[in-house]
Length: 121
Image (cartoon, rainbow, N blue to C red; front, top):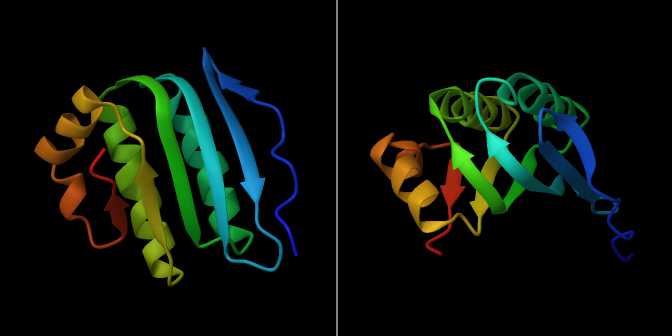
């Protein structure tokens, strides 16, 4: 079966928007983010991603090409989601991270997390 069309971006909080695309009969989903990941936006993002994993989508592909900023709270959120996904036999994959965001994730050690996979772009 084909993947249904992506839903429109919806506001999570304080300038962070998300679009979720599910795959039929799959444990995988894609979440596209737009905006800043910081202390204000991390809690609703954590809740949404954990809800997806709890609903059976243990493999979450996070498209970060429109993310402009990431702080320590967002790094903790990504670590938590990676651990939750791994505990369900899945993983968190980050795609299209901007150069500065990618370097920050690497410095924080997230690129070496067992439950997370990060692209090279």
